[in-house]
Image (spheres, rainbow, N blue to C red):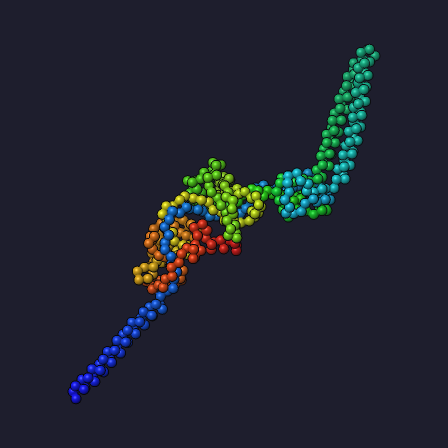
Length: 398
């Protein structure tokens, strides 16, 4: 009887132990599931370390190398127009024709006046020759010859003045046709037929050169001093600076430029120095007024530590990144930032190439938080050492 009770009690104990064990195992699995469910979903990438060329980027604008407002030399009504706004023209090409009737009349009048004065001069010269012959035969006095010589001189002066008047009248007539002073593209500010143009005042059209063109931008005083160590901006020999531009659609312009001009002083309003780079524009892609991101090449930084700009957080005057620590927990590390290079910051100190930094999922992420990490590459995130896609997108929208 006692044996049967022991067996029954033993069986009951075994059932209880199995149940407790099952609960323990189930509870442990639940904690792991809860821990996984509570982990922050983040994307992270390995810190980069490599030789990195510095570059400096600025907002620039395309400017015409030469621009001229075409004004007539004579006044008159526009009666013919040989071009249209936006057209490319060559130096010496006719652009406009002004009403020439008054200038034609002036030429005819000047011709008649000149002919009359030349006739008077010719008659005076004949009389002088006759008086000189008479003087030789003592038929007249020397005073008479002298007086006649004076008359000849006066008639000659009048004829010369009338000759100059005719020349001026002819030039005015010729100037009723207005020619392009240089090769380039016309603005669309061209005046219409019927417009009265005043000499030296009315702008008939604006013409600007298209190849090459300037790209103008400004650099700060600090950047100027930094560049003085690399490129002599004041010597007039600035060809060593490599200049490239990226257009507002994100495409890099295929032709490199060179620095050619720097202002003599900083702007009093902005404290910046205006600089111009010259770019060839054989296909006419660059138009005056276009905006572009200018990039100047700088020195090479060996074994630079690089992290994406989006991985850097700032609080007050401190910068820090979140790295994936032991047991996949978040660890905050303060860093000292260097220059921007494309999508990255150069890190002067605070982390090493062995660290893995969080690049996505940083919102409300605190230190010591469990992380569910998805490793990514720079290509996955569109990170670049040459340009920041987010900046270019913003530039194209502005």
